[in-house]
Length: 488
Image 1: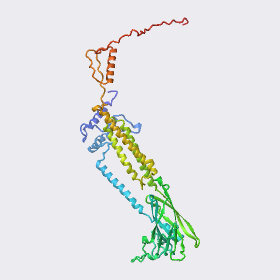
Image 2: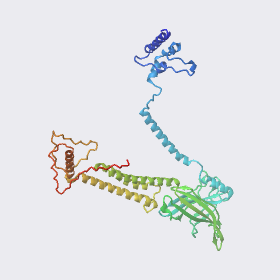
Image 3: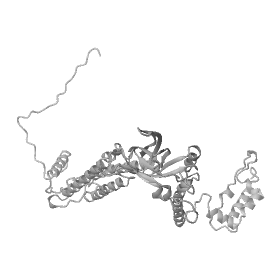
Image 4: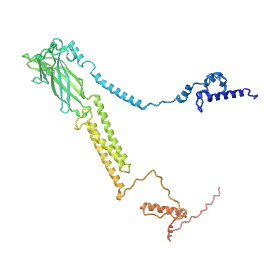
């Protein structure tokens, strides 16, 4: 007491403080006090640090002990690191909302594809200002690889006030272009007979507005062309080329005066193909009329990048499924029963059925006519998968025959059961008599009896003595003494 004069006072204060934790109102009986009240955060300044029980003398610590019921309940029931589980209904509702939002966003693509001005408006406005005249626009290009042929639907357009029929402006979105104001005879690829005839007198009027109406059969015509298909077997990397020549003439003139064509242009993107066109000015030689102006067009037709990507992805998926069928055969070979093999057989059969559907789902898929994609893809895949199914059937038959040999059904051994140890006979009990078994079991049984006999254990019936042969020599070990050297 003399050495520590304040120890009683400190212990008393500490006891009252600890006692106040349990007697504070709103604290449940048996609940431990908050750790942050018992162990206060030390001061960052080392000069102001106190002993463990020095905080009991301060009135601020006593005020922190008497906390409210809500604060204590909130401290114990909701820890700082607690995680609140998300209800399953909320997850399902959120998934449905995201799915609908995804579908709506994709549907907006159709609206965006229609946005913008017509594809030929800028070209027609530029021609009307720089080189007015007659223009032929390919509104549609139908590529038929099986024929093989290309059909182009041309629209007859005139740009400039000197060539345009009054009241017909506004074609293809251009207010500077309309229908020609002259009759035309159209010759395609040097034919003597015209492919189409145009007469502005046949264009009807709109009774309400007084403007000319654009009737497709009166202002459009079709031209058929043969297609070069020497690269068709490279689907989807097939490319086609086409060249054509068109000439215009006036049917009303006796001399059939030629009319120059300012441009030949077609769409860049059609169904399943991308088209790149290039037109050049040309002429034909006529002994009577001299040089007759014509216009030639060169077209390069190929598959779009999207179609090629989809074909390659489906091609890869088909080969992956074929490799999976090979894996089913390797897994089935490890099985000892026939019933588990049936699951692998069903999976390989489903792959065999799915391969033709994947082949037909390719964009604008050609027939099975020996294309390169079938030579290195579809045909080998069908052959390999069919061979795997035959191998699985043979495995099923072999397992059935091995499990039903001699008319008896042998159950598979349980690999999880531990082996039963052989009993050790000390002579007090007799070993069990051998039962009729296979030659291997009899050999193991005899070897066990010989090993017990050699160890000195009791074996019944006893082993017969080994007869000694008179001609058999006896080997004796003779100790040989090696004399020591005198130098040692």
